[in-house]
Structures are given as C-alpha cells and as structure tokens.
Image 1: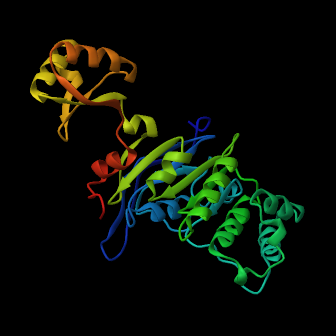
Image 2 (image 1 turned 180 degrees about the vertical axis):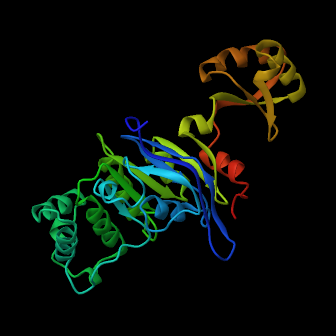
Image 3 (image 1 turned 90 degrees about the vertical axis):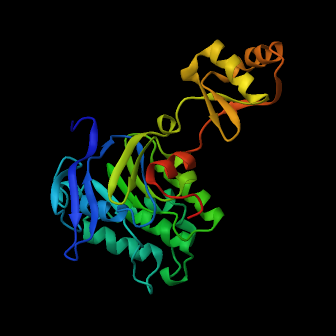
Length: 302
C-alpha cells in the first residue's frame, strides 16, 4: 500500500472533551501523484482531519499513515509541506526574510528560498514587508513556505479563502502546476467549482463522516440525454420501449435518458415518428453541486 498511497486512514476519529464529535471514523486514501480534493461544508471536519494528519492534534481513536510514517513523526514531516488555516509570518520582515527564517529552522538550504519564490511568482515582491501583502500574496507566501522542503506531499487547507475571483483563479493555476509530476496535493475546500477544476479525486465529508470517495466523473455519474416533449407520458412510453425502463426517468418535468449524447438524432426520430412533439433535446449531466448537496444533505443556497 505504501507504493500506491501516501495518505491512509482507518477509523480516524476526533472527539473533543466537550463531547463534540468533529471527525467520525474516517477511512481515506490519497494516491501518490494525484491532486485530491477534500470537499465539505464549513464545519464538516476538514481542518480537524488535516491537523491530525500532520500531528498537530492527536486522534481519539483510529490510525493514519502519512508519507510512510505515523502523523507527526519527524521522518514523515520531512516529506510533507503544509498550509493549514492562515499562514503565520513576522509582519515586520519581508516575504524573503520570512522564508529564510523558515528555511533555517527546517534545515533547508537558503538557495531554496529563491526557487520557491519563483514557483509562486512572488520574487519581484519578496522584498516588501509581510504586513503590506494582500491576502492573495500572503497565501502564496504560505504555499512557498510549504514548498521549501520540496515535499512529496503538499497539504493545503482552504488555500483560496478570502481571495477575490482573480486571486482564486491564480491560486487554482498555481496548485495545478504544483501538482504535476510525482508530487501529491491534498487540498481541502468547500468550493465545488474549485475541486471540479483541479482535482483528480474527491473525498466528500459531512458532519465528520467521509460519505463518498471517488473521481469527479464517477460522482457526477453517467452521461445521458435530456428530453422535453409533449405529451410526456407518450414520449416516456416510446423511450421505454426503445431503451428499457432502467434507462428512462423523469426529472423536473423532463425525461432523462441514460444514453450517449450521439443518440439524440435517433431519439428525436423515434419520438417524431410516434407523433410526439419535441421541444428540447440536449446532453445531460448532473453537476457536482447537485451531487454534493445530495451526499451532504445540505440545501442549495444554505
């Protein structure tokens, strides 16, 4: 398993003294070389899980292996870079000098500072004091600090929090670039679009429980064809005869047919031949948003 996964948890649980069950028996696996999206609403247990993985807090029960070692083990931490919650730096030091402090504490050659500044595109502004940085620049510096050890695993907790749309787009591009090759990125987020655009696989957490783990495509489900026609009962009957009952369902006053979009011409021909009027015929795919709310029990707009 060590050869294929870089993070593996079994029954990972965290219950605080107040009785709050923050993380409930999470079984999660993150494969080497992928960008894994840890997706869930605010308060679902994402940050608590990540804090356990890097050894900042201890689980109440369960086990985890991270980069081949127990969470918090020095040998494992040497292969991990992380940005959990907000980046913390000395406000009166420049971005470059802050990274030099981190490098010295971590036993990293100082020359690595300029390399990571280039990676996150902060080299031209690295001489400015951290206190003058925008939120986006602070997040980039946090990512740069996490990259100093050239880690096998990069753990990022809500890296686009507080960023404007332009900053979010730039951070997404940065994460996609960082996630190329052998490096693994474990990214927590509550933003569906963010995960859909940059992640290979997704783990959905709700109320402390991991409710699904799969690729985005598997979550969204099979492709199909959406049909709006009149009379709808006759249209449904025609399609059931042609494609089988298991392939036909109703949704919001339309028919969803489990079939390749290329069959649309045949569908239209069959309905027209039967005297059914077709007002809409288009490819259909559930959005990640729909699946997310279905899995978490959250209501859209909540």
